[in-house]
Length: 307
Image 1 (tube, rainbow, N blue to C red):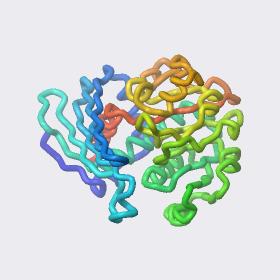
Image 2: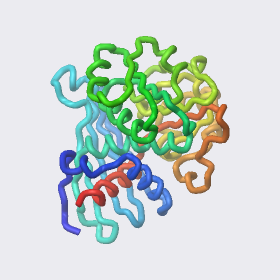
Image 3: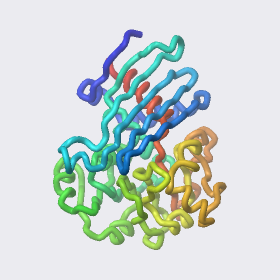
Image 4: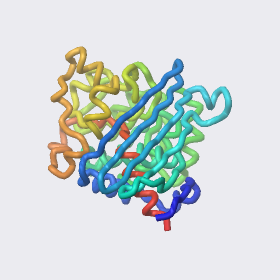
């Protein structure tokens, strides 16, 4: 296979959310990947390099520069980087892929795959918390996976919500200025923020909901309080990239609010049926850690999807 440079404009017309979740599930039937992350920090700015190698699929290095103030200060994206894909057999460089493209499809595809297994199939109200880049891809992914659903949007800065809603004129979208009311009304709650302190409260949850936590990716970041964790059946996309790396799990485990064994499964349990909702009344929770193995599976899907 010759080397390719994949841009978002080149790839987007050929990609499909349901095809991606199928590819992610199939990727977890392959031998378990090797993964390693490296994180450098300068204040709130972060350089994150993720590495993955899956026998039968290839190898990947994804390096991202996460600068939370970029949009406000420079009118530039908060996330920038590059993805490099290497051949499984001979190790030569196969492709470079647009960082935003892979991140978008991997992140929201990760959450949608979990929701396909953990949310009630009749879920028809999706609350999207946040109004950044992740919110857009979550709206697109969840509307594909739950085509009859209507959406509620909430964000700390209400001014950002109207432009976000207008980007999807064909969807049933309402805006909320009361997070508690929005949480109580939702069947699926998906949060993709840059929060360091919990804002989602377990006392707001009701039986039958599914909670999808995306934003926290560092040991000092959290979106949900301890009561959320105590009152839900918890799953992760990968034990290796979440349990000892992300505050969402590290903090409540350290405090005794939950135990490590309360995290019931990851995507490698999809094929056993253990990564699943057991009853209509339980509250399920998925922590989306987004490991490099998922970037690799997503990149391989993208490369294969483009003619």
